[in-house]
Image (cartoon, rainbow, N blue to C red; front, top):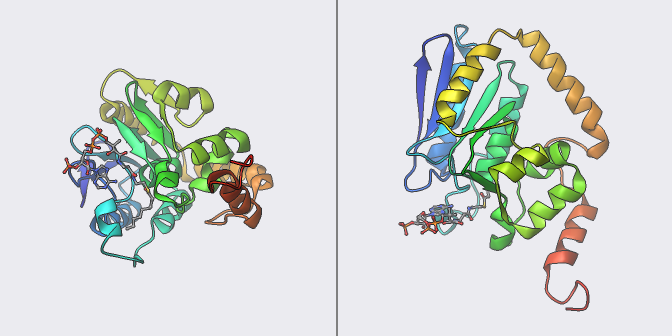
Length: 237
Ligand SMILES: CCCCCC/C=C/CC(=O)SCCNC(=O)CCNC(=O)[C@H](O)C(C)(C)COP(=O)(O)OP(=O)(O)OC[C@H]1O[C@@H](n2cnc3c(N)ncnc32)[C@H](O)[C@@H]1OP(=O)(O)O
């Protein structure tokens, strides 16, 4: 599930809770969607923080559900779009891990604050899939195409420090990233929604050279991806 808490100072906190690693199940995804809706429609909420329970942000899709469902009636990509469309700033507080869909959720947010020991990555390739919830668009916009391809194709986890250098994370802290994100959200909640919207629109506009937005993975990217990952196709292996 995802817990919604209305904090003091006009903030809302959305906390993913699905032990042991807060993986995104259909229940968690529904919880995030409903909590976002509450935060967005509540005029007294000026900024939103998303975090995970029990010291971990999120290890991606709940792979236990992969055995049960072939398709899902709720899409993480739609939730990411909703975060980006909304006019209130959203901060991801990353403890321990943000993997796969968890990283896509964080990339959808306007700011990411991580603990120094945290790791992020896209392990989808190890399951034979691609990041499908806007990760293939949002990551290259932040880090450029070569670095994004490297992370997506290798599936490796990187340290918060490397993520900071690449531009995936905005700030690293040695203290509790949730507390830091709340403080930060409070500071920026003064930004007018118009300012935020203009900035997001400008960034989206400037980065449009990297390809169309929203769940679009070009045929060339997919072909290149399979060339590199299917045994026997690459380098005569
Ligand atoms: C509603 C639609 C949702 C769609 C969302 C969008 C789709 C996105 C695609 C993805 O996100 S694909 C990526 C999925 N995630 C992974 O592949 C991560 C796999 N897990 C790991 O790499 C490791 O387990 C870990 C998270 C790095 C932790 O490693 P560690 O060595 O510390 O512990 P483990 O013993 O391996 O795991 C502990 C415990 O956690 C369970 N677990 C781990 N990952 C998941 C997961 N993704 N879903 C459900 N459960 C997970 C693992 O089974 C262990 O459980 P146990 O009961 O203690 O055995």
